[in-house]
Length: 297
Image (cartoon, rainbow, N blue to C red):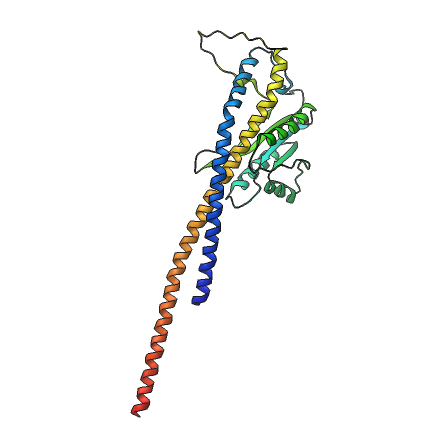
């Protein structure tokens, strides 16, 4: 059995760890609330953009925009497929990063020419250690997502798509299902699918007539980059919120585990203390008996 001093040392170490995990829990909780609030503030604007795109697309012919060009003339083996992988900057978030990497690698294994854009330091280190090529000049943090960062990311991938350095682009990120669970999702960003913007109108509702200046195609090609900015921003906030939620659950589990260990050590400590007291009493009683025997003799 460990000495009481050793047990006390272990208990002190666990108590200090619980203090740290509690602090991390509070920080993650505050970041989660802030991220959700920011997303809720911007969602109406981007939902309106999506609705506007749906209305305008009814007035332009099929495949007239480069953003809807599926490039069907290109063979699968020649297509350059981009993956925007959203990981975390920090660990201690359970299986959050592992799940993202698993999905990314599964799809990259079936892609002839993958192009990897990684957000988050954990992701960059993960792929670099495995000698998997990533876009070296693509350095973005996932901490506290902003519209400015989402716009910068959108500009980079759109430029590559327009130059045909990319034929398809997917974003892989974690979305929250509820307060206790999340899942990794992969969404196609480019090229866009008209079917994703179709809104079925009731039979008795006439199609509206709208006058778009200078023309519908020019208008839609100005709106699409903003739509992609909104989608990327939403995904970043969703991923950041999921990361914080995963860290909350990991810290909560760590605190519970630490508390359980403290209870076990407390029992062991009291047993050791009782054993020490019993030993001292035995020694005192034994010494008294020995003294009596000496006097009698």
